[in-house]
Length: 452
Image 1: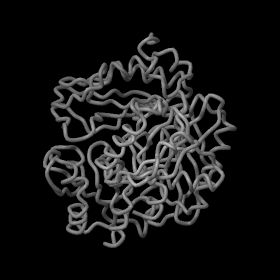
Image 2: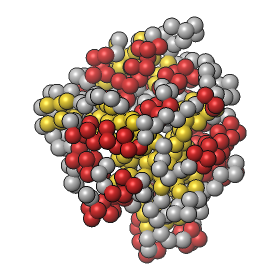
Image 3: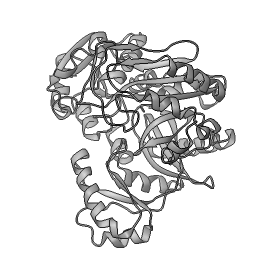
């Protein structure tokens, strides 16, 4: 173990991301503490951590979102730091601040950075001031805002209403006609209040069939920042990503370095630290617009790890422990192509959730294949949480080889006992538009008619 490294880390999450953090800690020689709800006592992150603490009933608000219970578990087990994973409390500035006040290192950006960049409206204003274009839109709209319909007319239709504190595709609605605006505004505000405890929203012009491309960054406490290239996340359903790849077929190497440098410069100006992802939409003419920043590890981080060879979770931990990045931008090399499919416990036709017991489970292997999962034969996919079963990642020397390996892996992936989205993914990666790399966020709208 390196001098001054953390001795013990609590993982404030569950499932595959908790296992992913356990793996990084084991390689760094750090002991781990798992937390789990009463529904999750048999999960693998509980088994493979050095210690485990039950933090409450199955409902997330009583367990994985219960800050007092998590802090109590951290204090009882005498940990040095907490890794929040993604989702849950990962982008809670309040949780980061509580950790700091309790003398526990939060593995992520500072509470102030989360507050600034995690609020979508404030982040847009900040990034715009730093010279990066944003989609035409408004500032924050709350229930006291006078004449929000006038603001909507200024933005123009179609537009999208977004929760200011949103994430994960929640708290968004596309409005195509002015007469639908006020009713939809009220609905989104209610959804935002329920999901995030904050009813504030903002409006943006809606782009037709854009590319959704994000840049991964790492920033240490010494002021060094590097980008690890982009991920194309354009294949989505209801703003939730289903397939991701890197590099994007849409960007040239020159454009990649141009945009990466722009992102690095902006984050240096705000003093950002740890891992983060800056997300853009690209219109049909190739113009790019900042949409938001995720101040945490992303679900799709393995795609970047496969093409750069850089362990992003380990880097998060090292940065939080005070170590500088041991590589520069010039050292980052992009090798080949990588694609990730998110396998969910859902109907492949209707995307209806399909929780239940897995009777048979076999993950594929072979050259260029990685599977991040906490599933196993006889485990239960709980109705209380996200339906993610596994992330299947394929890497090849080029995009054609990555797709070929992904095809092979999807055909040998076995999950029995519940419905899954395996058939959906098999169709997607054989679709003519995917094979050509010519797709946008409206891919699924044309999917049924063009599937090979």
